[in-house]
Length: 203
Image 1 (tube, rainbow, N blue to C red):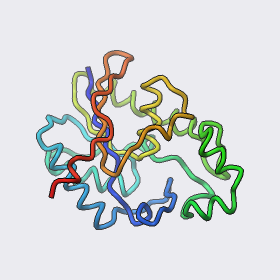
Image 2 (image 1 turned 30 degrees about the vertical axis):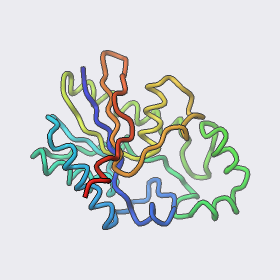
Image 3 (image 1 turned 30 degrees about the horizontal axis):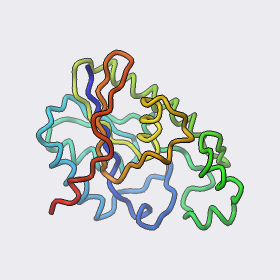
Image 4 (image 1 turned 90 degrees about the horizontal axis):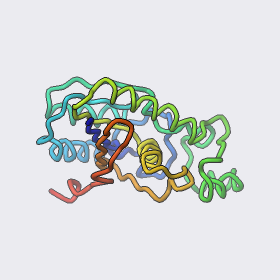
């Protein structure tokens, strides 16, 4: 059994402004750094064998803070990046809705068929993230691994584990520094925790 602890990165200024980030390399905000220290404290008691993260700053910074509690290096994997939002990156929802009204309808009703201009589909994002996940699992049998990634990426992986279509993506919430735990037995993943953010309520 390999235990994977998924953690969404801490908050960024673009999160606070409601801007779509995707592959844009936005760092953590002051609030995001505080959140990262809180989730690090929450995970301090876990016996962790390795820490992986997306290669984007917001995930790397979160992983580096978590790693301080475990004296482990972080290993970056671009496969765990957020979806590439293409022409949507740097824009907020209102701006996107005004310029791409038909695509926004698809975004809400059938995200798996959405094609963002100059971006990536959710299927493409899931394919690379799933590949990266199984590379990690193969390398760490019988171990516990933290993967710091992004809301869309983690939610898409959870959909695949549950065996549901990506049109159900919005039924799975991943808050900033939300923790989700999945135990993998052979080819089967069993979810034991989903989007735990209780650590953010503790001062």
